[in-house]
Image 1: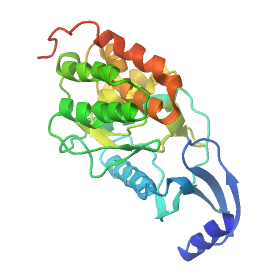
Image 2 (image 1 turned 90 degrees about the vertical axis):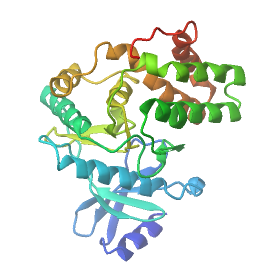
Image 3 (image 1 turned 135 degrees about the vertical axis):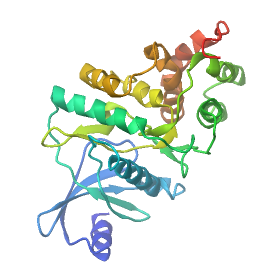
Image 4 (image 1 turned 180 degrees about the vertical axis):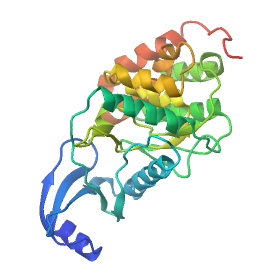
Amino acid sequence: MFKVMADWLEQEGLGTMKSAIALQGGDICKTFRVTLDDDSFLCVKERPSELTEYDNLLSSEATGLRALRNAQERIENPLRIPEVVAIGEEFLVLEFIQRGQPDRLSWQRLGRALAELHKLPVPGFGFSCNNFCGSTVQVNTQHKDGYTFYAECRLHYQKKLAIDNGLLSPQEGESIDYLCDQLPYLIPEQPPCLLHGDLWSGNVLFDEKGAPVLIDPACYYGWAEADIAMTKLFGGFDEAFYDAYNEINPLEPDWEERVAIYNIYHLLNHLNLFGISYYPQVMASLTPYTQKRALPRYL
């Protein structure tokens, strides 16, 4: 495998590989720190051979990284996004970023930068291409209406996968249909914005100077609250992040009550990716929205 990687790097004119060390993290692709003959480093992601049917797995990640990098040119306090150095069918080569430790200021910088990103206007909901959340296809068909987009491209899509995989019954799927019908009553209208799309702590790192870096995006144009909700799914970020975000782009009142609605998408995805262990969380998250119809708070 290393010989294939080394040969490809040379063919791309990136230099001669001296060594490659596996990096921690990532459930789908193997990631390596590659040392070149001039002692510089690259980050190389290798697409698993068993995922050959997903021929745009790496290219869609590159598209997301480039979208995030381009957006940084339009904000006052930009985030650091790894540069895409080269892309092939089997390998994605990125700028290597040395990790450091965050402090309170680091989390504040992340909050402010994400808030500025979320304030940039975009043409509608969806994205320029489908991509992946984990190894699950993420459908990004363009819509003008956020409720329709979230229902059709997020919840209904994951529901169908779960039923087809034998992880939910059709009757349990009806609970998701019921929630989709209630979305306009539960979620305030929000303009679309560019989202990271998979914003949990494992996809945020800090460089040697403590500057925030976003990696492994699943970008699309959607509701800002969906990105913020994802930060809460596996423990949450430092409170300095949320305080700084709200200074720049204040969230609507009661946003924390809506976190579970957005994260049902990610829990369904984890159910489809990792199996029945996520079933209790999915059903517990759905229960409040299946017991009674919500009042028309936003219509």
